View 1 (cartoon, one colour):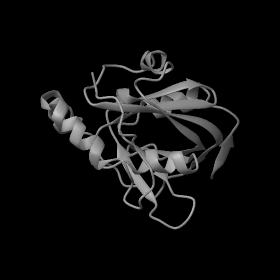
View 2: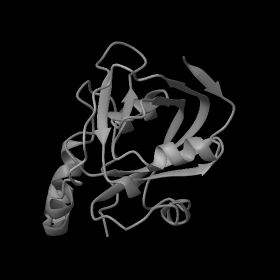
View 3: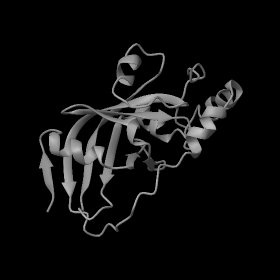
View 4: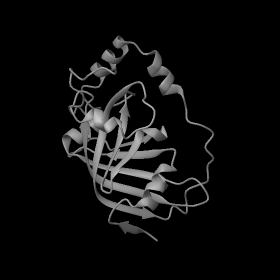
Length: 187
């Protein structure tokens, strides 16, 4: 039932493109909490090449992924089909955080669709294992629409709002370093 792939071929890229949500899992090196986050907005994920992907990290409620990547780089991304064609695809790899003030950031933005307000960073993942599973027990769901709440919030957010968010996200819930105090504000 499960299959491992040597690269992100066209079939896998089409599967990834057709998913409205993906999940990100990270964990600290020692103790602490495992983080599992759903991510939406289809145009915030990009396949960069056969062994590398990236997604836009938007300001939100927490900063666990960034803290865990700074700690050890381990990350797993999961795409799950909720349509009649069952499938789960997991991308295992090593991730890194690219800040908006990094020289690499503008070239990464070219891989994404519409620009979103509130972009905190890009997460780039070098893939080490690409594997799927059947997903036979995953229920069927129909997508109604993308939820506009975060986008609306960011469109109205002030500089002070982002400064407070950076201040709250200097450390993970387990105390690991996350954002730096000089993290750039969205612009």
